Image (cartoon, rainbow, N blue to C red; front, side):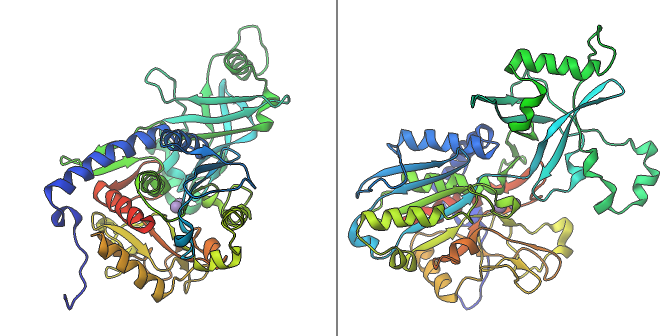
Length: 453
Ligand code: MN
Ligand code: MN
């Protein structure tokens, strides 16, 4: 037995065969990233993957029998996969995996379109915690839906194909930034300036708002919509960037939305590909970045309702089933950044490339707002991971009292389910283009697979 604890570098530790698996696995992940940049797209993409593995759509209340492979698509924005196992094993509870598929971005306002000095813009209200300046001068794509009065839904996705136009938020040139440079970063970038340029061609016959009207006429031709239709639209501006390998050795991946697709994807593959007699409930949640509110977020009663449905189908008490269930709240954590080492406490932060990271607790100012998992549950998981040679590490978001953050863990734990955060360390979290290590991604897949086995 080792007397001291040291984190292990995954790529140093694993054999040639696993190294190949690490790189091969990341290829599927990059496709998933590029195909599902919004919560709606990630849900749709996962439904396709699940259907290929024989999963069928589930109606709330429907009886579940052992062997069933089901998905419950909640309003197209959150998804529940149910793999119904043997009754004997259900006495040990459910194995629950939950990641989120919403990511920070710029959402269009409900009356977004205007023009100023012959340039047409869309106004935005940012979603989630962003550093506003990071979203300036980045190529943007528009994704989402417009719902018309008659209920018809128009899908919008523009800026992703090679020959698509992209969209753009300006920044002030350095030559004229003397006043801006004197301001604090927190206040220097007014969110009401996060306006997206969408056109500059005036309609010749129009006196007033000639560019805005020309954009509207293009939108009318493309989508059959008028300005009022934005009232019932959800359009998200996301970086028009594809996931790319980083580094001469290609060990890292940069992408939009690693938080939290880098946990959602291994959660999905672990659920779809693991042979198990256990009952597995795998969740892709929405609204995590804004507090898990609403009927697609993890504070919604739907999770309890689905557990009730499973319990009733097996003739068990829902309360007993929840009490015996175990959950991994699969969310990213901050990776140690050597360029900003002051922000971290080096003994307790997660390191990129040293495996999937467990945050026993999150929160801020004295663990406030955190699910602080029990030593017993962490000990239980250590046993599971050791059994399957999962390389994992412990992590804490950053230096005490520097900031903090939360995850959905507490919403599961509040329902009397043992829960801990386990996910992939990320550099530049919440930036338009984030960074992860393929080695950690693969260890997440191994960890989730071991958990549901
Ligand atoms: Mn997250
Ligand atoms: Mn986040």
